[in-house]
Amino acid sequence: MKAEDLRQMSDEQLDLTLKETVKNVFHLRFQSATDRLETPSEVQKAKREVARIKTIMVERQKGIRGQQPSQVS
Image 1 (tube, rainbow, N blue to C red):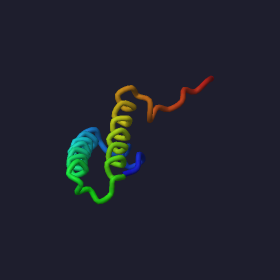
Image 2: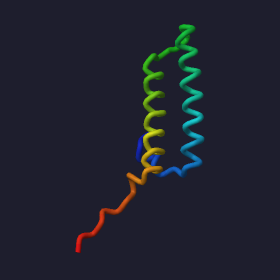
Image 3: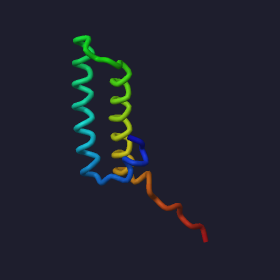
Image 4: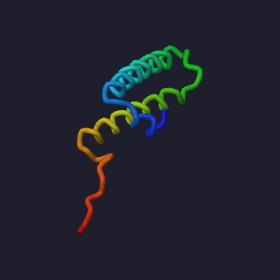
């Protein structure tokens, strides 16, 4: 999922998506350990997704994204 799509989600949706993605990372790592993982790059993609979601959550907490630039008179 792209960052733009994630930014359009509510906080609750982001939290739910994060939980699902972390669960997916766990299952992918388990499959990797048992040599049942078809595409090893899926683990890396899932980890990046987790990082992307956490970054957006921190941006919202700090008010970094979505602020209007201050007007100079």
